[in-house]
Image 1 (cartoon, one colour):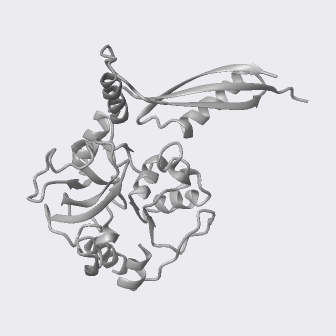
Image 2 (cartoon, helix red, strand yellow):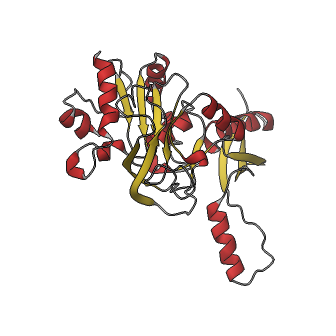
Image 3 (cartoon, rainbow over the protein chains, first blue to last red):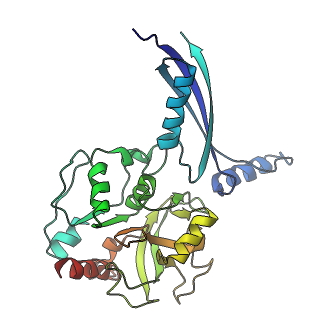
Length: 88
Length: 214
């Protein structure tokens, strides 16, 4: 029997630096309007939590790379990174 | 869309369900506009894994025609059948308006009924229609003449004023290198019956039809 472990992944999907973020720009002007004069830039991304089972952490990371490359992020416009923690 | 192919052009038209897999009888696939799977995550992102898409890819491999309009264009880029991506409009607004487009090439079945540099009026209706690709991809698109339609002013000038959504190089529609796959944000099917105010889009379907029947 293969022992599986449960993992929780916190996935951050961010726009690639070369892609304009009009929503981020709108939020920046909102913050400046509020008086936060120090705000220089706002970039809005996505945060995804995935709970999954895997044989080990390496296997969990492999699965997550596949999920991000194929669906959760679009490599044309986005980068991603994630951290995993073992939960039980 | 079906109204145009079935009623205006009098062609056999079959609606394909996303779970269908046998579509070998189809000559031209049109992936229409709308919202697929709520457009969750990204427009067209989840639709690319619909059961029918394997058959769509096989159809593409055989060199048969595929037209993606609006959300359909977004699906084609997510599928990887066309390069680049469609992102949030420059000014954030959903735009529902008429756009003037310049026809960049007329050697494709899609555009053979137009004249080169013809300016046509076609409706747009999208929130994420800003075409983006990296510098290298853009260069390839231009070098291979894969840009089929560009946003322009009413007088045909391709510039920032004529660009409704911030698309790079004013791109409104592109094809693959072979030319059998076309993706465009504007809606030619909404300008294909004179009753609706413009029939500028009809020639796109007529051109394709002439090739298919030949």
